[in-house]
Image (cartoon, rainbow, N blue to C red; front, top):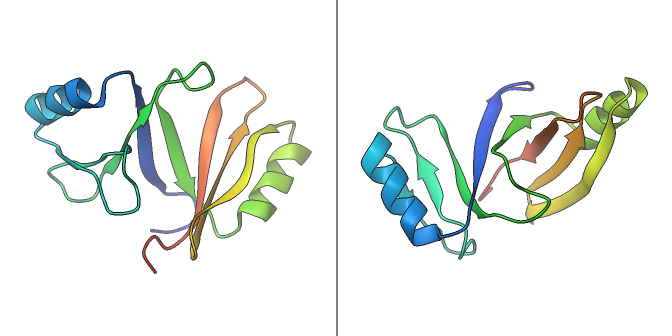
Length: 120
């Protein structure tokens, strides 16, 4: 994927088992936990490209969130802030070779950022 591609979509859920059954039956998504990401089952669409995760719902996470791949989270955050955006969650490690953060656009929409390679 390249800078600007939507790479992942998280769906907030209250019951992982129920949500897994719902989405796999409704859309034919393959949904499974990966080693190191227990409690966060990942889904993949039949096209083998689209995917994301079923994430625990919280007071701060109530709506699906798209993640955009970027070349540099630090540069993208600085650009977003200069354009009137803010940071909802600072850059954090996913793995040794990947990171994520969440920005907020001027309209209040939360957009996830992804940098790196998972499992790389």
